[in-house]
Image 1: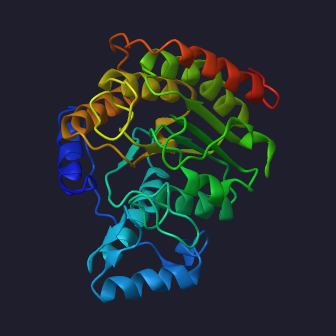
Image 2 (image 1 turned 90 degrees about the horizontal axis):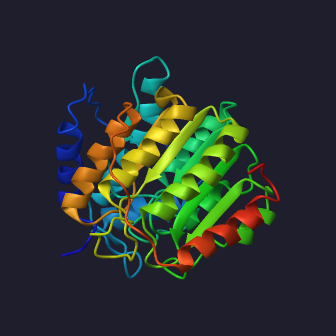
Amino acid sequence: MHPERPERISAILRGIGESGLDLIEIESPEIERAVLALVHDPDYVEMIETFCAMGGGALDMDTIASRDTWTAALVSAGGVKATVELLEDMEEATGFVVSRPPGHHALRNRAMGFCIFNNVAVTAAWLRANGKRVAILDWDVHHGNGTQALVGPDPGILYVSIHQASFYPYEGRVDDIDHEAKGTTINVPLPAGTAGDIYRAAWDELIIPIVGQFAPDWVLVSAGYDAHTEDPLAEFDLLDSDYGWMASRLAAIHKPNRTVFTLEGGYDLDALRHSARSTLLGVAGDTRFGPPLHSVERAAGSLVAASQVISRHWNL
């Protein structure tokens, strides 16, 4: 069975329902072609439409499309923008976009890593076109190479990724911060065996201070849950509670009604369910999260090395 399967959505929805929070459900619309073209080549968009209309197939060794993928991809991208539009007039809310296919590997003219369109980058570009500053925080275990490529040159978009080093898609170097829009591309690659203790330290010592200094109007979280210790495709050791802890720390410095979480990876169904629940409880103010697991020894050194490079651009 392909890991990017419909049951992921059911698991996330169960977790959200189990949060006990008041929910407003909206049905994602299809993204407008003009908005999609802010980051994707129109010829690529047309190719995806034609490819799906002809029955689909393999876009690469990991990314499979069917006849229905065209609509699904449009709706997946449209959900992020629609959630932002809804939150603009709300004071006591946050957004969680439950959609597939995911997006953070999708490039301007190429599908990759289960991703067709780059859902978060599309909405970030639309917000920028409307004069807003945007921070994208990517806690998926894989580096969001597509997102970095699409938003990296724009100094009004902060891109932050914590990810497993020397791992698919084999990108996301710390020194990327020195290229293009210098200072606004933050990569924190960490070794296999990294757990919540180091993730939390990175969040507290690097990410939260940088977001505060950048002062975005909106924060879009690429919420992949494949850094979970139970996930079958990666080698990190996060717990459900780590996601709640990170969400609570973010909510303490940035308005939840200007924050949207968008599903990326995560392939263990129970981990997805419980981590989504924990995330929303964290945003809602719950701080009763248990202790993290302990990382392999070299993880602390990797965090220090990343901090030294990043501190050339930010006050840490």
